[in-house]
Image (cartoon, rainbow, N blue to C red; front, side, top):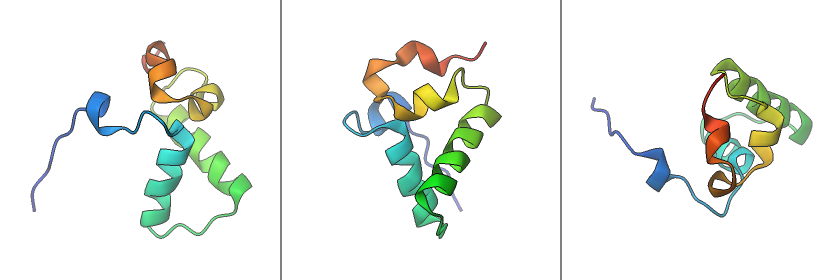
Length: 72
């Protein structure tokens, strides 16, 4: 087993919202949730890592809110 480290600045798709990218990742893990449940899981995951205003960040495109990634 090995770990591949990636710089999120270059590995995230700057045309997709944060929620779209997280939804894709959760779906690959086999999560079969409805839209509302998936949205709640995404917001909870962002809040769990102390992202300020996780609902706003989930809807943001990465390039439009770089300051939102820093925790309080």
